[in-house]
Every structure is written in C-alpha cells, then in structure tokens.
Length: 346
Image 1 (cartoon, rainbow, N blue to C red):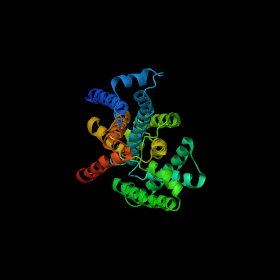
Image 2 (tube, one colour):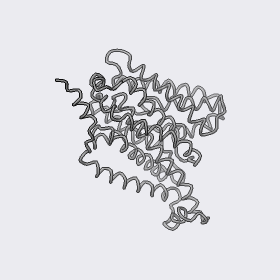
Image 3 (cartoon, helix red, strand yellow):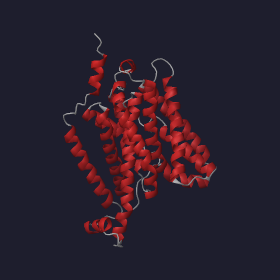
Image 4 (tube, rainbow, N blue to C red):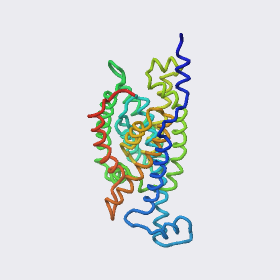
C-alpha cells in the first residue's frame, strides 16, 4: 500500500496549535507596548500631550512633538527590520535544518558588511539603494560559500559543520574588513557606526527602499513554508512528496538572503534576532512554518524594538546601539542552546 499520498495530504492539512490564539494576542499586546515605549521613551521622555501632538497635529511645533515625529520613522524601521530578521532566521533554520542557524552565526551579515565597506572605500557609495544591492550581493555569495563548505565530507551540511563554517568565514571576512578600513580613516568614520548595528539613522527614504525587499522575502517565505515542512522530515521523504529539495533550498535561501541583506544594508549587521525569535516561537507553537514564519516576524519586531528602547534608556543621555544590546542578550542564549540542547537537525 502506498502511503505517500496520505502523508502528503497530512502535510497540507492546517492544524492550528492549541495555544496559537493566546500567543498571538500576547504578541500583539507586546508589540503595541513596544511601539508606545519607542515613541515615548529615550533621552527625552515625552508626555501624553506631546505624544498626541506629534501624532495627530502636524502644525504643532513644540520640541516634544518634533521628538515624537522623529521617533515614528525610527520605530517603523525597527519593526520592519526586526520582522525581516525574524523571518530570515526561520528560513535559514529550515533550509539548513539547523535549530541554531542565524544570519549572524552563518556569516551572512559579515559578507554583507564586507561588500558595503568595499563600496564605501572603492565606489564612494552613499545612497540606500547602493547599500542594499551591495549588501545583497555580499550576503548571497557568503551564504553559498558557507553552505558549500559545510556540505563537504560525510553527512553533508550538519548543524555543527555549518556553524563552524560560518564562524570561520566570519573571522576571515572580518579580517578583510579590518584590512580595508585601517589605511582609510575616512571610510572607518563612515563605517564604524554602521558596523555595530543601529536603527537610529532611520529615514523615510530608507523605509521606502526597504519595503519592496521585505515584501518579496516574506512572500517567498509563505510560498515555501509547506514544502519546508516536508523538508523537515528528511530529503528522501520530501522528494517522495514531490518536493524538489535542491530548488526549494535555493529559493528559500534566496528569500532569507533578501531579508537579511536588505536589513543589514540599512541598519548594520544586527545579530541574534532571527535566532531568538524563531527558536522561542518553535518552542511554544511547534515546528509548522505556516505559523512559525508570521509569528517569527512579530516576535522579531518585538525583540528589535525592545532592544532599541533598552539601548536608549541604558545609554541615556546618549544611546547604546541596538546591535550591542541584541548581542549582549543573544550570545549567552546561544551558548546555553549549544550546551544544554541537542544540536540536531530539524
């Protein structure tokens, strides 16, 4: 008896996790709280009246109202970048079948950074569009390289081999970045603030440039989600279900690179957001990517926005860049996951 059609139908059935509604409501409430905190809190705490003036009365020219308007673009930018990094983390974990995969861990962020610094040093790039295309090229080449290196030898691309390949690639590319920067002080001044990862320089131009890449990446994620669920059962089972595993991996990885590369180009190499958001959602809701992907987007937006607000409060009257905050939170969590969890394929 052939059980493949039954297995395929089972994969296509949509079983809503029993606690999905509760988790969704909690995440939406947290998202609202983060948005409000991002608009109100910082080196200058604004009052309720100033918040209302800044949001609804464009003719109001008070200092507090102007602060709120400036924070609107920053808040939207952090939400979009967080969502992009969250979905990118979900895609990369699924493509590599590695529960601790993340753009920063696999070296993709560093590849994007190398191409950006080369563009600044040798091509005098300055616009958001130029940053994005160079970062996408660097992220794509690095992703292919890391996956290729991690696939060499017995067992193919295992989780540990991919992490080691990503770490080695990150170290090598970081050295190249440093080698380019040291003799070029003017490039270092422009690059060093971008390198730590920050949403503080957000502008409506950057948001406008970023949104098309976000839409394309998320659409790819949703289209590939059912097939990626089948891939989690193993390549042989997925092939038996009619999934072209090679094409699927390439297409899904392309979506992850688009999201990660565009976010990195405009905000800098912010790490661990994809790892944290996706891992937490998988623990709560299970492995079904049809739920993991949208919830990773929401949780990624929450994590990045909350980290940005925390950085403003900790560094007041200045600010601590969001990339530092996410690294401070994410690094110990990664160590715990690698030490206490069985780092196995998804």
